[in-house]
Length: 559
Ligand code: OOB
Image (cartoon, rainbow, N blue to C red; front, side, top):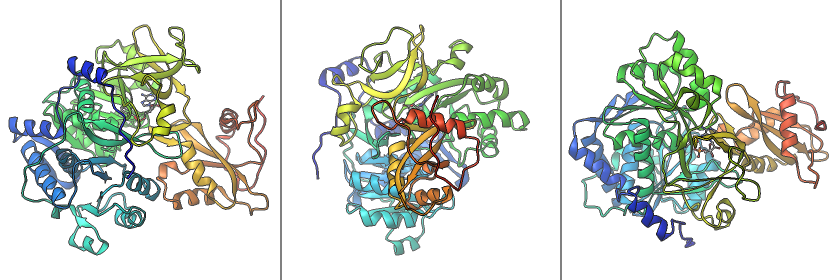
C-alpha cells in the first residue's frame, strides 16, 4: 500500500484555529453521545418512507451496536467504507457507527454506477461497501457483484433493508450486523472523519479528506448563520451524502443543534410539500432547478408551507429573477449558498438586505476564511473586478487524498485552494459567482468533469476524438453537448448509440451527454489547442436544433 501522507494544516495554522475556538476538539461520535444523554427521547431522524422515527437515544444506541458489528467483522480505524445509501435512517446509523470506530465513510451518491463505484472501492482500497436493497428500481447488488471483481480489498457488502437471501450474492443484510455494544477507542478530533467526493475537473475523481475538527466547525458556523437550533426541522431533499444537505447546515447541523431531520425520499413538491406541512419543516436546501419547480408548484398547492422559514439554494448559480420569486411564492427567506466539498462555504445572511440576498452568493462562514481574487498570473485583481477565487481557512482542505501530483497544481505553494470559480467581491465582502475556469459542467448542481466523460467517449471504437462542453438550459442552467469526430472509414453512428455506449460503460446517468454532434474537426485556438470556447459558442447556436443522425459536418467558424 502506498504511504502517501494526507495533506493537513501546518502547525501554526492549526494552533491559530484552535486558539480562535474554531476547532473545539469534538468528534461526531461524541456529539451524538452528548445529545443522546441530554435529550434521549427527542426525535432525531424521521424516515417517512420506512415509517421510522428514531429518537436521539435510539440513534445513539443503534450506532453503537452497528459499530460493534462492524468491528467484529474486522472493520477498523482508518479503514475506508464506501457508503451508497439514499435518504434513509440507515444512512445516519452507518455513518455514525463508522465515525465512532474512526473508519472513513466514502460518500458515494445513489446515482453512481460501476465506473464511479469501482474506482472509489479500488482507489480507496475499501474493505466494505454499503448499498440499499432497493432504490429507484436499480439493482445495487448486481453493481456490488461487478465492483467486487475489481476491488481486491473489498471483503463485505452490507445491504440496508436486505434479506437473508442476500447471502447467496455474498452480501449481508445490514440488520444482521447489529451486535452487543463494545468499548471503542474512537478517533481524535484532528483525525479524518470521512472522504467526500470532489465535483472534479479531471479524468479521475478526487477524494476530499475532512477531519472531525474542521467539518464540525463548518457545521457549527453554518448553524449560527442559518439560525438552526433545537426547534429546527431540516428536510433533507437532496442526496444525503452530498456536502450541501450534509453540512450546510444540513442534517448534521440539525443533529448538532438537537433539532430534527426529516428525510425526503425524492424531491418533487408532491412528496416534499406534504412532509413540510406534516412535520413542521423549518428549513431545507435545494439546487436552483428544484427551487424553480417548488416556486411554481407552491402557487397551486393546498399544503400549508407556513412553517418553512428558510430555503437554502446553492450548488449552482441561482438567477436573480428566480431568487426574487421565492419569498412571494413560498413565504420564506432565501439563503444563497455557494459552497464546495473542499471546504469554503458562503451564505447570504438572514438579515442581509433583500437586494444582497438576490444578487450575491453570500460571504464566508469564518473570519479566518482567506479569500483572494486573482488573475491568470495569481496577481490580485483590482477591487470589484472578476478573477479566480483562491481560498484558505479553518475548514478548507490543504490537499486531496493520495493525489500529490494533482495537489501541486490545485493548491498554491502557500496552501490556497484553487477553486476554479470566477468571482467578484462586492464592497460588503459578498461574492458574486461570474463563471468558471475549470473544465467542469454544472448540470443543475450535479458536477461533471468533462475529461472523465471524454475518456469514455474515446473508448468507443468508432470515435477518433471527443469534447464535452456546456450549453445553456433554461431549467438546469447547463446541460452537456458532446462533439465527436468519428474515425476515418467508421460506419456512421447515431447520437442515441453514443449515449447508450456511455450508459453501458457504467457512468451515472447525469453524465450521459444530453446532445451529441458529429463534426469533421474541432475549432482551434491561435496556438493550435482545441478551443472549448468556440465549441461552447457553436453549441449555443445549435442548442435548439434537433440532433442530427447524419453527419459529420464542420463546426462553423466563429465570427
Ligand atoms: C457544492 O459542492 P460541490 O463540491 O458539489 O461543488 C462545488 C462547486 C463550486 O466550486 C462552484 O463551481 C459550484 O459548485 N457552486 C456554485 C454555487 N454553489 C456551488 N456556483 C454558483 N453559485 C452557487 N451558489 O455544490 C456545495 C457544497 C456545500 C454547500 C452548497 C453547495
